Length: 374
Length: 227
Ligand SMILES: Nc1ncnc2c1ncn2[C@@H]1O[C@H](COP(=O)(O)OP(=O)(O)OP(=O)(O)O)[C@@H](O)[C@H]1O
Ligand SMILES: [Mg+2]
Image (spheres, each protein chain N blue to C red):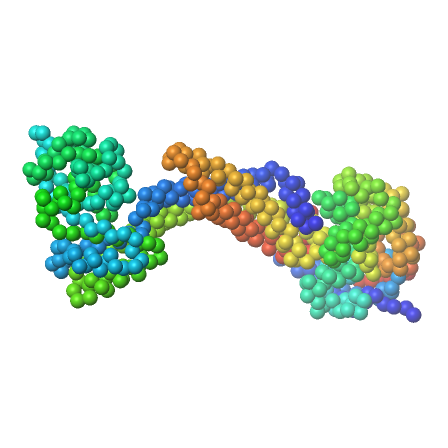
């Protein structure tokens, strides 16, 4: 009955109630849709890092004078049980000549498997036995096509595939490089392994594998440096969370305004209804009951505003995502929908907090003073 | 045996404002018996309403003691006083003071809601009360859709909801024409006789004196005459 009474009291001042609801609605919508967009942006960016979170890069420790990784160290990494795959990478730089054009570029020795797993082919097929693979930028620079015959330090080689432009990576950068087979690499360079890419079977074991590698290889001397890609990914994710938090804080300002408007509406109500409060107290309503009625009114305002705002924020999120990311599938992820509920929570909390002071004020009215009020 | 239900001992009430002090009641000694119909008369400003508010536990005396049903009210907390009002006292005001957002039915039901009476029991009691006051067909209407006389009947029904021992009426006919006023007083008298409710009625109308078992006259906060 008290809830019903609260509802009717709000209905009695319909226009004011609706304005207060609109205020809350806008605030919740701002928080919700900005939260959704921030989370979508993060998800879109993080998608690119999905494949590298379980990766460890093992480099020779240049600071201690080690310039390559020894075969026996490679063997001991391969022996670690939790490791999924180990790819030694050798690279050198070499003069590349195609017709009358020439340039220096990196040459990597890799295997077909690693290439296929990590990079997308734009033209041709990966088959290092029958020819080399070139990165997009180098191909453009030298106007290479599949089948072009290039020279690497005077060694002839046919382009069997051109890779798509890859984004920033943390291990090798094939955009301006030629990738050849191990055997071919032997012919043009005597460079040794300068990077071992280790993929760990499951994400939880990344730290364990890292310390195992360090313990076994660096027992006497700091021969290698192990670099955890998970850390970078975590940092980026963290940065996005901070940006999101900041955006939501800004959006919350609009809720603050809404809170003040609820405070205002309810303070007017307590004054208008002073006599009524006196009557209620005279016929046996406790202070706490009066307080409850006013808090319920604040809560009803908050719940209605927040619910409508939350629904609109989903549409808002879809709209912003579509406009800026051209993809609104992220809206329906659990981590994204979380922000809708966060919006509701902040909206209702704000309303309740704004209702607290008027409710307290109403409950503190002396019954006799309230009754005498005209 | 005669049972005293309200007792006032040397009650003073002083209102202090910024500029002056008003001695609204000056040492009132009064005993009201159970089932009595007491009429309070006196000029405007003589302290009649103040007296009623003290008996009704809406206010506390500046000095002296008010005992309701043997309980001294001076030591009770706000919450205990509220429960006392809810359970033992019914108020009827000159301006009816119904809750405008509630229907007639709900207005009468409200004191029982505050007491925690079950829904079924509330429903039963409300229809008995509405029947008793002859306003059964107004149950679903709002106060502003009723005549003054009807509103005052609703107020009486509400005052009786929790079966109080004392009914306090502050000029209940003040806003009504003389015929309707007479009917209201008749109704109150009838309740007083049938239900043995103690009634304290403040009025300016001398023709109502016949309804009272006793009439007291107030002037400047003192009882100056009893008949
Ligand atoms: N809350 C208050 N603050 C200050 N003065 C008050 C207060 N309540 C009552 N008074 C004063 O106390 C005196 C008695 O008031 P009270 O309302 O009891 O008179 P009354 O006999 O009921 O008068 P009326 O017949 O006009 O209703 C008056 O002088 C009034 O101004
Ligand atoms: Mg008066």
